Amino acid sequence: PNSKSLDAFSHEVGDTDSFDATLEETLHLITHVGVSEVYKDDFGEGMYAHAAGRGGAESKMNFMIDKLNGDCGFGYYNNYKDPSSGECTGFYAYDDPTCDYQCIQTEGLYWAL
Image (cartoon, rainbow, N blue to C red; front, side, top):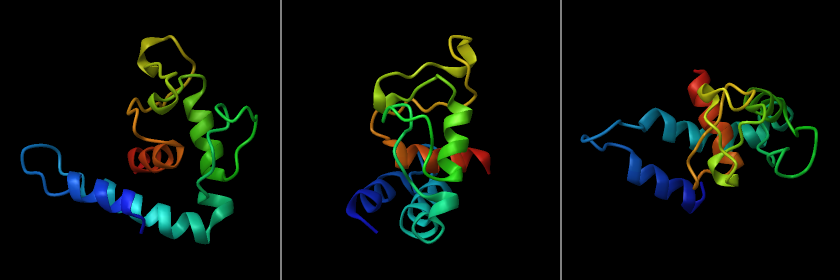
């Protein structure tokens, strides 16, 4: 695992004063260094198609995240719109400005569970 993953894991897991993010952070480790590498066609972590100026996705998970996002954007790209606001066509968007597209994919997978 890379140090970014371990740093996030150590800061968010086991905090008894707030939501315990153990499952979510463990999923980041599994998807980032596990299934995304072994099953690239299905779970490969690619670039955000809209931000990269492409119309397509690199994996089935990319494709589904892009479809669910519609034109709602993401916090990391400074184009986030709340899907419940009616200002965009998507159903899923994540407003965390520190969460890049690889992170966004795991967050989407987590919420799908």
